[in-house]
Amino acid sequence: MNRVIIVTGGSRGIGAATALLAGARGYAVCVNYRKNRAAAETVVEAIEGAGGRAVAVAADVASEAQVIHLFETVDQALGPVTALVNNAGILEQQMRVEEMSAARLNRIFTTNITGCFLCAREAVRRMSTRRGGAGGAIVNVSSGAARLGSPGEYVDYAASKGAIDTMTIGLAQEVAADGIRVNAVRPGFIYTDIHASGGEPNRVDRVKEFVPMKRGGQAEEVARAILWLLSDEASFSTGTFIDVTGGK
Ligand code: NAP
Image (tube, rainbow, N blue to C red; front, top):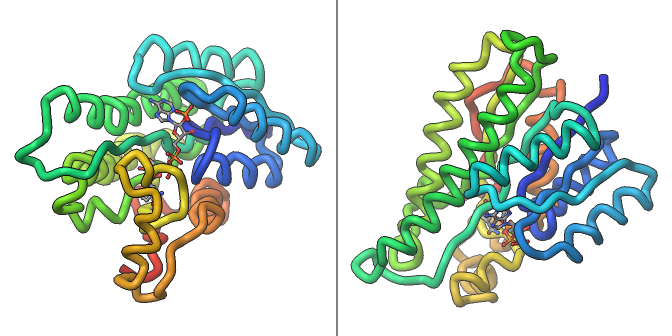
């Protein structure tokens, strides 16, 4: 079977590590990105350099039209998707809820929640055995923040990940009989560029003392959990979670 994976936000961080590992495991890979084409192309070149197949496709997951275009482009370039990693996600400047504008809340929720739903919708339409598809697997990238709430930093972001956890449970049960498994990973403090968006690039080093393993995580450690959940090794797991948090 031709295994085709879409990794949203695959141009850097956890998404890039996931795209690279998927390429090494034999998937044809779509590296989705929003703005940074050069970074996405670097990931594509690394996959191709290792003998794999990959394409970079620009799309803002918060835009329904762009998500539809993303999946149609992949249909043409690689074939119907068999695996989706809903990884694209954003956070904004650390602040208390009493300071948050509606515009900010809508940016966070539209990208992190609506984007995840739209990509899942397009994937299910192609994967579902009820619709003539061959089945597939979806992994949502949630966060340990869904359990912790991120007080004083970004309760909006944490709440968006809580929504993703609930969506994972509901969608998993909805499509379980249609050949599709839906699971999530909840990363903890991982060394990526996302923390700069919150105004604290070195956040992981500040908070790592609170982690039982006394360190931050690497994107590759999250990628390995994602690839396991996508694989046949996880064939009887759906609607469940892997925390990749060093114990917290
Ligand atoms: P990152 O380094 O900031 O990378 C984010 C990626 O998402 C980039 O490729 C970016 O592409 C893309 N992206 C952002 N908005 C997008 C949009 N609207 N449409 C399409 N692509 C978009 O982030 P990361 O730390 O790897 O995080 C990846 C996921 O893990 C997120 O869902 C995040 O919430 C979750 N997570 C991260 C941590 C952590 O500590 N790092 C912990 C828990 C959960 P462009 O550069 O082109 O915009």
